[in-house]
Image (cartoon, rainbow, N blue to C red):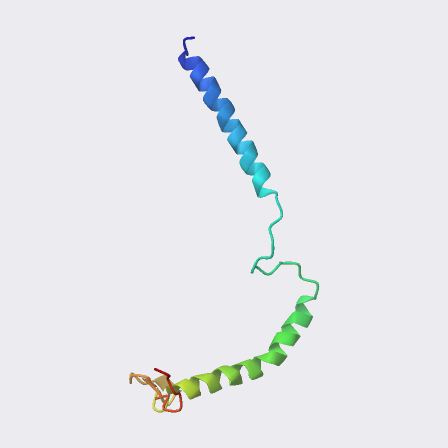
Length: 99
């Protein structure tokens, strides 16, 4: 049986369509648990804004405490402008490393 160019193109087209259908079907399957948060907002914008505004000072304090515990930030700001002195990491003498 001799394959002509027309028959080869027709077979490639059929295979291509089958591959596309299989890929489209594979994308419809439900996945297991993911790390992505669903975008299904059930709160109003005003309530979300109020909740986050209320929580902001506590989060800022937590981050500032963490930075102060890790780094020596003394002299980093000169008035309202930042100074160009390197930030020094505090030594962690209290951490014991087992060998």
